[in-house]
Amino acid sequence: MSFGFNMKLKGDAEMRKNLRNCAKNCPEQLRDAGMKEMEVEKKEIQARTPVRFGVLRDSIEVKAPEMKTGRVVITVGTDVEYAVFVHENLEAYHEIGEAKFIESVLDESEPHMAERIAKHIDLKKMVEK
Image (tube, rainbow, N blue to C red; front, top):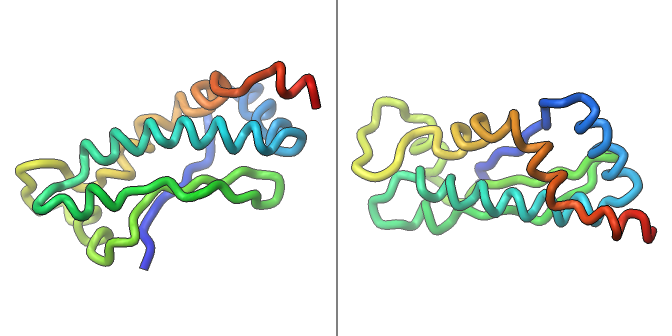
């Protein structure tokens, strides 16, 4: 069983349009930029992951990007079977971490994600294409 999230970018319409064009014309640039940003998100997700023995926290990973109908899809999540129960149980007490440890990070990052991904794109490489 795999448990993870991906997100649809929102924010500035022109920025999203430019990133969609980048996905079509320079997919490797967008994949690399998205991976760099998701590694940052992964660290925050791990910081919020409930810890009893550390297995769940250590299992959080960013999956290799996939191209789907002109979009780059990057998923962050875990293959630990009990992850969904820990993530969704809002009533559980955790000395370390919190429920919704993936969802909360991505929800908070979502308004700024397109801009942060764009900062990782090397325009020189795009022009050289």
